[in-house]
Amino acid sequence: MNALDTADVIVVGAGPTGLMLACELRLARVNVVVLEKLTEPTGQSRGRGMHARTVELLDQRGLLDRFLAVSEKFRVGGFFGGVMKPWPERLDTAHPYGLTTPQPVTERLLEERALELGAEIRRGCEVVGLSQDGDGVTVELARDAMSGGGADEGGEGTRLRSRYLVGCDGGRSVVRKLTGIGFPGEPSRVETLLGDMEVTEDPATIAAAVEEVRKTQLRFGAIPDVDGKQGVYRIGVPADGVAEDRTTAPTLDEFKRQLRAFAGTDFGVHSPRWLSRFGDATRQAERYRAGRVLLAGDAAHVHPPTGGQGLGLGVQDAFNLGWKLAAEVNGWAPEGLLDSYHAERHPVGAAVLDNTRAQMALLGTDPGATALRKLLSRLLDIEEANRYVTGMITAVDVRYDFGEDHALLGHRMRDLNLKQGGRLYGLMHDGRGLLLDQTGRLSVEGWADRVDHVVDLVEAEEELDVPAVLLRPDGHVAWVGDDQRDLVDHLPKWFGSAVS
Image (tube, rainbow, N blue to C red; front, side, top):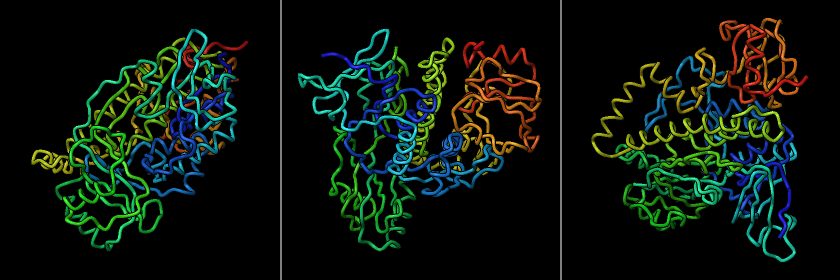
């Protein structure tokens, strides 16, 4: 059985993380194949919220208008452990809102973009084995993998070959397990049933029941007209214990029983679109890279959905990884660039796990949790505290440690209006580095194939009071200053050797 060289990178999983990664890789002309076990998208809309940082990166890649056309904006501050406050003033973003987008729509838009850029997406391809050596990764697919993927004549399955492989295949990641990467953490202690279904009860009666139950149980809820479907509710209700096999979906009868236990009525639920269960397990991969295999999204970290951070966290993983992996494939990556993916994103994932642990404690029903929620509510009435928590949940406060102490270094740059060139994010659609030069004296000669040089002034000087900034392709500030020699010393750290 001969392995087939098929791609520079194989991405396992066609969810939002895998599709965003495919888009990022194709911007750099990397040959990428996405393998998805399912033959068709599930149509389930588990992840619906995208916070401000995810909105920003969509804008950085020219995708935001597509999402705005099919999404609803929301502005919620605090948004922590069942406590919600008005949106804080002076949050460091030009996109002070989140988007509610059905997950199937998110996946469709990202898949359309990936295909436009030339990615190959193969559905019905289940990974059952992989091995790696110094030159690449060999993937074995199940025997019933779709035809046309390079099946061996003996009918023993399909083998594919790539230089690198990224597992974006969810919390039960096969890639992570096959690679032997540890996934330590805590198992679920509580479980919640979640699903979309029709109801026969009057909406006013449902609303009143939800309001009453949520006085003591914040894991209970019923959202009407989910994704614009009139009469369809998204129901969440605490389960009766933790299921031994959480891969098995709950039944409608189980939902009815739990609804009656908490609300005294089952709302006449029927005709479920999908039913699921989730717990409060928190786990994180010990490492995001093992040789030529990397992990992103839920394959690298799982946590409760409190705060609505999961989808964005995975997409932001892809945004950090894509340009670095492309640089490695294209041969210009400086030493250690690909390893910086783990160094930067593992602490971010750990911080999200911690804040969801804290939120689950706040959602408890005991008197201590109730007292903590009251205290937190009062604290979030303080503008600075509200801004801190909102910045954490929306990920606009993420700063990578570059080992230097200028206030801007490591932070992502907010969108800026320029006097001549429109908006900063409008100049970043191609996924390249960018030198925003307000002096007109600097140069990126030697790196012009990787870094764009924009000579322009920021319209509002107080928004950027430094002479120039060097941005990585993910929008994080890599250098600040006005000295050409200092710039030349910093360019190789992120963009490799100069081309003469």
